[in-house]
Amino acid sequence: MHVISLISGKGGVGKTTLTSNLAIALSQRDKRVLVIDLDPQNAVRHHLGMDPNDDAGLVREGIFPEVIFESPFGVDFIPFGRVTEEELLEFEGELEARPAWLATAISGLQDIGYDYILLDTPPGATVYLPQVLQAAAHALIVVLADAASYSSLGKMFKLLAEYGKDPATKTCATHILLNQMQENSELGQQVRAAMMDSFGSKMAPMVIHRDALVPEALAYERSVLQYAPHAQASRDIQHLADWLAGRK
Image (cartoon, rainbow, N blue to C red; front, side):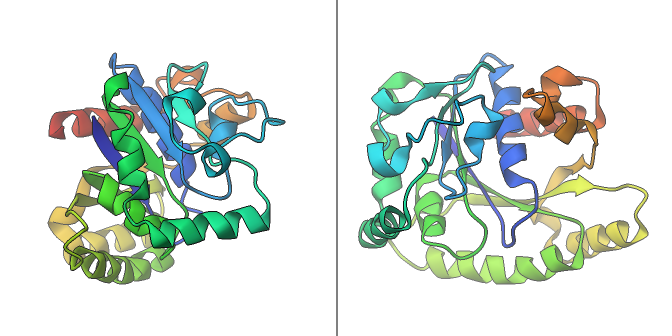
C-alpha cells in the first residue's frame, strides 16, 4: 500500500484535478486505488462522480471501509464531506491533538488491498500537512511555472524540514511537479529553469502541460484520460503514473 500525498504552497495550481486523473491513470494499470480528500473545499467528489447532494465524508464518518465510495472510473474515494464551520473547527482541533490520526486510519485499510492511496490536501501550512507527511511515503509538491509558485517553494521546504525534526514524523520522499506548463511561455520557461537550478534532483522528470481538454472533459463529467486519451495532458499524466509505479 503506497501512500502518495499531493501538496502545494499556494492555491490554484490544479492539484485536485491532477490527483483525480493520476488516480485513474494508476487504476488503468490494474491497480487498486483510493483517493482521500483532506481539503475542506470537498472538490474530489466533483471529479469522481459523486452525487452533489450527498453530504457524506470523513469529517463525520471517519476513514473506514464502510464509508468508501466507488467511482465510475475504477477508483475508490472518501470525500471530505460538506460540513458546518463548527464541525470543521472541531475536526481540525482533533487533528491538532492527534498528529497520527490519518496514518492510524489508513493502516486500518490495509486488508482491503489497495496498491495506492492518494491524499489531496489544501494549500499551505495547514493542520492537514503534518498529517499527510506522516502518512505518506512520497509527497508531490504541485506548482505552476510562475513567480508565486517559485517563491513558495523555499517556504515549503523549510516547513517540511521543521516537520522532519519531529521524531514522530517519518521522512517521505519529496518531488516538485510542474503542472499546467505552457511551452510557448517565455516566462514559464525561465521559471522552470530557475526551479531546475535551485532544486535540481527534487524536480520530477516530467511536467504536466496546460491542455484545454482537461476542463472540457470535466465539464462532460469525464476524466481527460478517457475523454481524450491522446491529449498532451493525458500523455503527461500517464508518464507520471509510470514514473511513480517504477518508484514503488
